[in-house]
Length: 343
Ligand code: SF4
Image 1 (cartoon, rainbow, N blue to C red):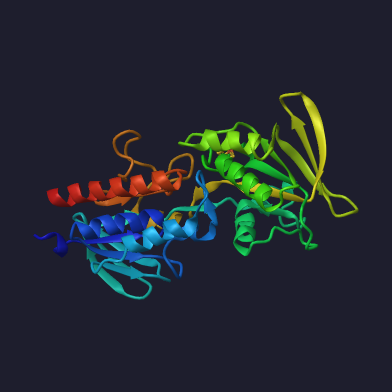
Image 2: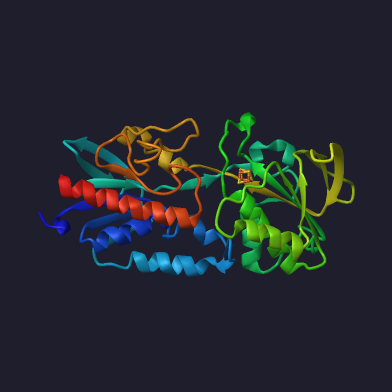
């Protein structure tokens, strides 16, 4: 059987799904790429610049779009999976719109959802206008203006790390991995936009795991004079002038802090996407204690699921940055190629 007679269904047209689709199409496989949104690219479409080099995200979306520009890839946007039947290692799949026929392998690349910040009432998101999320701030970078709801330039900005991550109260014990460096990047961008502003990051630990992250963190302090306070914000309120009042504890100095800011940015963490979790029963796949899909082996099988012929790529398995997502997607393509050559 030639590769082109084999059919792979990829669910999710974000970074992971598109990169894997490109690789597999170049191997000669026929690909059905299902994306629920109107265009491919996923969350990266919302981001303005990327860490650590602050390149424009459109450069990466251009790369992703080129990956899927292949005659063997049938991209179906605005489409969601409907029914699945699994028999003898083959999947029969239909979307709400059409029957995709039989698939020899399926790749789940449904990505992540950002934590819903309204669940952390103490931070006042959805209650006070000038409490925003990291995503809201990216939208401001896109528009070119960072303004409070009174259309004023914020002179003091607070950034809260670990919102919805490493938090027993919301049931998320995991570290979302990328929000510390996102905070550093966004703090620099605020200072770039508003040079006379003061920016304060409230962190539990600074987790700078990737190449050039530590250097960016250092640059943020030495060049941009971003302030880092080790401590957890316990409460946010609004005073009579409409400024936000933060109560926290500086755990290095062992002192309580009360600070007024004009804007507060919440670094919302990553969770397995609802769109992915909806597939759980359809495919009979499992999640781990962190809510992401359970991989077959932590060391040798991080693209493999508990179902033969069904693979994972990207942040549906764990928080990861774009570089790691691309590598994970390429590895998924290798796993699928090997699987199909044996079956
Ligand atoms: S990367 Fe940083 S901000 Fe994000 S969850 Fe981990 S420690 Fe918290």
